[in-house]
Image (cartoon, rainbow, N blue to C red; front, side, top):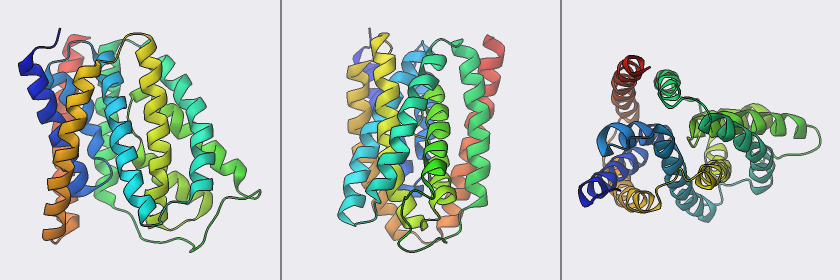
Length: 258
């Protein structure tokens, strides 16, 4: 049973994730699982992953509403990508929840190292204005969607750092549109993973609620600070270093527990 202290830590963890998302954008939600395990103290890695998936899905839906208002979402592409990805996410999450918890955390830490490296590389603003999904690229869109969905489901993450380049590679859409459209898939993948875990009793609903509330508040302050600060590249570099530090800590803890 989660007590008030752990609920407060859950709200703090959500605030940290929301703040990082608001400050540096994509990649911030990668901290949700390690914070659930090592800060909040969720003893079961699978519960941490299932609960994080729900929180990430809700946060993505909130971001999707904002991008929709700015007309940066390509809905047809997002729906196609998400439809194929939901199938992959269901399969991936089914495999993940039956995978040894400590080994899953070890693999998650390796994933964090990859995310940190991708953030250091940065993204180039390119693409074709008005790019859309049609018969010519439908196969690529569905293929990328299924693959990233399976990956997202297995680790219980939003997967935006994979979905954005997947959308660009399959449609050649502009970065602004890829980021907004990716949130359709992030929401769908997160809900699929959370639902799959929930059927096995691996979601703590109360903890997810306070985590989401903290994330909303943290995202508000992170976004405001990001608008005041210049040098987004430096912010991403600092955040990437933080990801590396957390990843190495997870590698150590999970390796010694295996």
